[in-house]
Image (cartoon, rainbow, N blue to C red; front, side, top):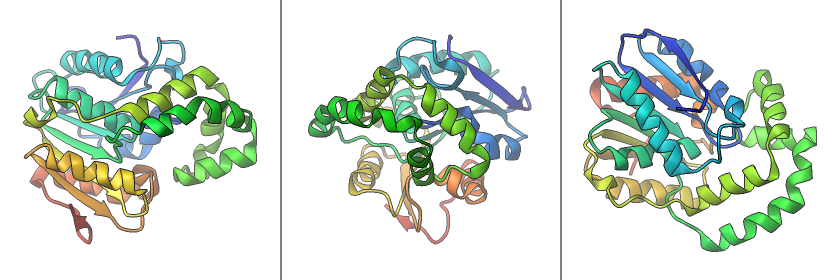
Length: 258
């Protein structure tokens, strides 16, 4: 295990692994690690991001394989909960597919699982043109706003954005745009909650439907008035949703069931 990770809560309690999205790092889970003190929270920085900047080239499959080793090392015979947002949600789906019986509960938030070869072909030329804007604070604030990054976290978000190399950004986006539901996903015995924001694009919503339709243990909901960034936008709602799913497999109220 080479990627950086931090641990919070009770080290002998059930394991909760939190996987961040692209363009952010483990700090996005601050509201969760403060809330779930009764769990053993493990929060990694994915390769080439955060404090794992120099820990090998990022790929979804390689990240999943490393994290499986980490889960096995840290679980201590306890139940395992995995929570992923965006890029982290794709990795969570990969973990559930590689080890169908390893995870007890999963929350898959905003996972894109419909590959888009045309969009992927545009990544390199588009990013090469827009990359200098990363260091523009105004542009960075606009990007942060779309992810619901709070003002308290903006400086860290901006600093990490400025540190990201062009080739890293291209690689992460290409992985994101290429990801499809793995062949073994339907075999996972994990109790899976799939969520997507009502304000997210149609591909994200269709991806949520695809995930629900590909595993009998999946339930899915569309969260009203939310775009891409539920854990940061409404952490109290998100935390309660997690707790209800883990304890009762209960879906959040006032949400459209997929």
